Amino acid sequence: MIGHTSAMKTTTWLRRGILACVLVLPRGLAAQETAALGIGDWLTVSSNMDASFRRTQFFEPRYKTVLFDVESRVEFWLPPFRGSFSWGPYIRVAAIASSRDQPWENAWLGAPGVGLQAFPFSSAGARGTGAGRWLGPLRVFAEYDVVRYWGVANSWRPTRRTRIGADYWRAFHVNDHSHAWWGETWHGVSWNSSNEFSSSYDTTVLANAVRLGVRKPNGGAVSSIAPYGIVESSWTRNDEYYWENRLLLGGGLRVAPDLARRNRPGRGMWLTRMVFYAEYLRSAAFYGVTAPPSVPRFDVRVGVGASVGDWYK
Image 1 (cartoon, rainbow, N blue to C red):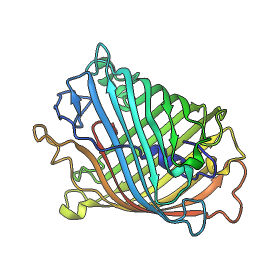
Image 2 (image 1 turned 60 degrees about the vertical axis):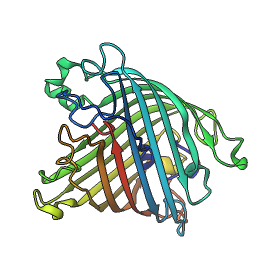
Image 3 (image 1 turned 90 degrees about the horizontal axis):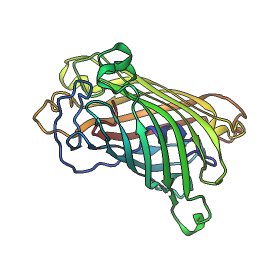
């Protein structure tokens, strides 16, 4: 997903998903408090979706686009199964679509993909420790994706990608109005074999994204409104690609309905995250070559995001 003139690296990694209609079977696992989608303890579906309007995409001053970004994983858990230790193969389906025709905004990024993953701190013994509670969402993976960029003009682009690495997703109180603060954090490091213009991309990618906000707790409708700060960063060994090597800072305002109350056991709720947001980000630094003066240093985003299953731990 790293590619030519693409300034949306960490946001693309952060917002992948597809909403699916599947059976909800509640499970009483202490370390898995969100609603689980799937069958028993051996198969689950986790998904994330984002639809937004973008003002510049850090690409062109007058660039405006409507962007839809989806990702879903069908996860198969091997013995001793997820209740004791989480590991196994998965199928990944991911796509991005735009109202503009840039190739990095219009593709099947997993059409599909297959992978093997493990959560090293997911064992029943580790869950009761401080390290287990904090490091439980850490995932190591190896993944092979079939990639399809849309349009005849893009038929020359690479169609295969291998990724090997680790990532960490965690959310705190995003849709729980009983807390005065909330947060979303994602960190990832991986080796990527290709991007949209080179089948020998072969680079290490380090990316981070953090959103932290506050709200008035237990304040009814007012508690849905939450201002927040943003830090996003991406780095690769290709320091001449300024769009891959930069620090973004910003802030925003979101409306997040109270899902914690609706997701009580037995109510069959499958939606685990939903937010409406408006945010502003600005390029604060470049880690290699600085972007040309013609490249805008800001982006405005207005959209909606949602997750189902245990996408955010």
